[in-house]
Image (tube, rainbow, N blue to C red):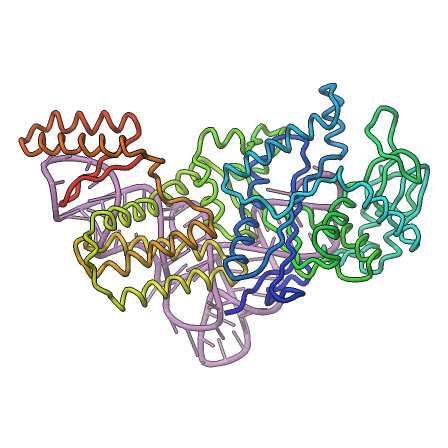
Length: 470
RNA sequence: GGCGCCAUAGCCAAGUGGUAAGGCAGAGGUCUGCAAAACCUCCAUUCUUCGGUUCAAAUCCGAAUGGCGCCUCCA
């Protein structure tokens, strides 16, 4: 089955065909580093990371670009408030972004370009737009003239005239048209600035993405992605300035993720429900956050709450328990298993189910359902049945490849355990088994309870006792 | 006012015109010294409502109702 993606440009699912062979230029709008990134920012970060991994799993050569916007009004405002250079703010929250992303299991992009490293490219693009009469300069500011670009509004499905009638009153008087947007802003005294033909200034909000995607990707990207709120004006403006300059489509496919609410309400600082990833990770396993997002389709709205997270944790634990059984059986086995064709076929069917789900506009929620089916299959197996070998082995493969490499989930709850710890655990378990044999339940329970206090769970089976970290 | 999205069990959620995946919670049972984990059984004759198309609709069309988003910085 061919991969299909929902393209915001046409509002339809389309077959995914890269522009050139199996090469994919995939650009995601990264953070503006003016604050710690929040749980809502984590959604595109995690979901598009999974899409990227799946494309690679499918054999595509993915050039994955996630920019850092490190110059912007919000950064300048914060720097002013704290009385530091804007670079201090940008550096601090760029570091926090990379740190959080790493903890969430997000793979580093092929390249993470920064806006401030690309000022020259932006100046060139602005010049080109002026030369082509798509932009005009007023008092050191350069604006894009949207009336010069007939396709304006095609991504967001907006009509220019209707937008003009509904435009806010507080528009910049210097613009020819209220909807024209800034490509270059003149600097006020004391503000960070770069020299330009129009005087000292800084780039407008949208220009950095156009420049960085062209530089590190192509004039026409295969995929451009971001949050739904970026459709207008950000992505609309990127299209206008890029296509006006290059005369070719800016991106073949546009992907947009749905919003996240907190307890049914929009997240905002004024409501006091603003949750940063940094804070959340002090409370929850990052992989729980990952599976929380994976359990729902990326384009739907998602609601974040304690209860949802508890459910996500329970779901993850179910998969981890199954994986724990896989390892327990494989380790305990004498490796005298016979081949079972039925199990092979069954597991092939699960694998195909997951791939079909992902091929259908990255339906991770459906894909996860198949993982639970596999978990059930593992849990139902008689661990002493030698015919179970191929099923268990194949299941492990699916967990390790699709589960870990594509979805970025970790199932192995065993921390890095050294030989000494393993030996000690075996001794403790042996002593407790002796106590149990003598029906010394007090001692047996004491051992189990004390271990639980330090995060180790003992599980008695008919054939012995296994242990794992919580 | 303009543009767009959504409505499936107690909760979350998938659903590709052919007769409702999965997870959580709950009830009963099995296993166990007790736990934990797991397994088995039960838990939507029905998909907000009303029309329509069709042999067949949760899926397509229309309308109503109820939520939500964007149009201003936002992932």
